[in-house]
Length: 288
Image (cartoon, rainbow, N blue to C red; front, side):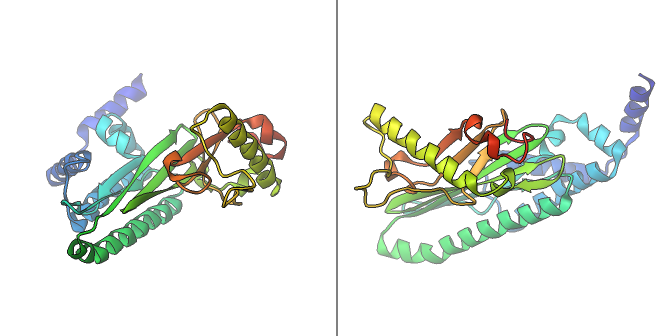
């Protein structure tokens, strides 16, 4: 109790500059208005800088971390925050690009690497859209891009982020990329790193093909490209197939739209029973 009282006094005595406090509050308001906000990239970078300052202080100063844990708004930010590129929207074209920013990881280098990758990919997406926009408008066509992210898993040990891109030019295509991070170790988990060797590719593929065929047998509206007379037949996953790990420790394999089925089936995910792959796992640390 005495320690808690000491920390309370430290918190109360902290002198946070008024200007910084004002900027943080303004930035939080901007970021939380996901659908209506329209800010420039320069403002977005400024917002990130302020949040990263807080994340850095939490990592470097124990007293600051204790104080910040008392603030529910800031406490939630030391995980995944977001910012937007300029929103473009009219009758023919629209662009909504939201980028995740990871803060508070044990390995700050990994966080920086991932954040740089997310920003660069989003910047390229935005630049491509802007380059094509005028031509599409002149032709009277339609062009759209919607990019964002979802946090699939957020436990004490794991963070799984799924980033999606929906491109619309006539029809639409959807891709999903997942990153799963060991928070404690500061490690980016890859699919091959979970297994002793590459036998998992065949094992998981066989399970998926059997599952797809069974689903088609039971439900008439489901179609997968697993029959020999299909124009394309799914035979095997990739070594680095898109995946994430659930909060219950289950492996989920993901396929993009059109990857293993017609477009109306959308993005597809399949949870792999642990008993199917248990003997191939390096350990039971992540998959249970």
